[in-house]
Amino acid sequence: MLRLEDVVKRYPAPDGGELTVLEVPRWELGRSERVALVGPSGSGKSTLLHLLCGIVRPSSGSVQLLGERLDRMKESSLDRLRASQVGYVHQSFQLLPGFTALENVLAAAAFGSPLSKRRQRERAAELLADAGLADRLDHLPRQLSQGQQQRVAIARALVNEPSLLLADEPTASLDPETADRVMELLAGSAAASGAALLLCTHDMDLAARMERIVTMKEISARGSAAPMPPERPRAAIG
Ligand code: ADP
Ligand code: MG
Image 1 (tube, rainbow, N blue to C red):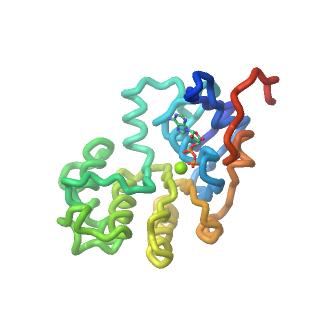
Image 2 (tube, rainbow, N blue to C red):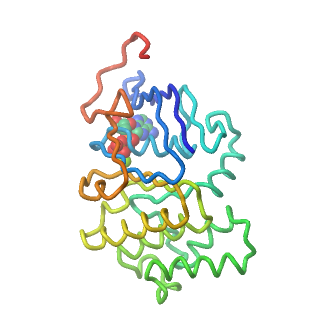
Image 3 (cartoon, helix red, strand yellow):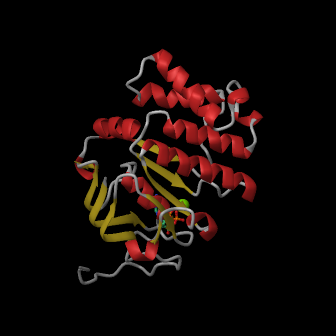
């Protein structure tokens, strides 16, 4: 499903140098696997999720999703692949403020769904109902609680039946009880549709509910929260 090989991600540093934030010799995620990704703040979890769906390109190395090399793909093809195959749940929901719950879900369907407009509408309403929001379809994000907004974001991520579901600390701003329901919804939806789920969190209780836990340390030679020293020439890692 997903395969990273020799991936390095560097960013320009304020001092004019470069900062290596990720160094992944090799990492894979299988179809229908449900995995928690844990690591301290700054260890590169978000960067990794962005690489996995092509929002960010690696400085070097290969990122394969469903057999396609994301690192070599044109922007327009990437957009299409991402819209149809990847559901992304952001930590801060990122709902469109002027759109209702239903419209937020439909906006994602408009880009990536092969269904007719009528079927898209039915599916979006079904997903929101499954998320316990049947009576909130026409509410704007600001008229919804945090947990309800996160559930709209999950319905949006699921509307195009993605094969890969990525969730970036999806419960970080929720109380424990709501976090629990949101986790249930995410893991349950992934299991029902056979999607792979990669969820990053620093809550070990939540992580323990996935099939497998991986730490950033295991994945990346650079999984550290400590400030990084200025980049010096180094011997190749391998
Ligand atoms: P996490 O999600 O685990 O908290 P991030 O992936 O957000 O970590 O960040 C990892 C490191 O990469 C941090 O040190 C951060 O400062 C750096 N970083 C992330 N995005 C950028 C960027 N666009 N430009 C420069 N540095 C960045
Ligand atoms: Mg992050």
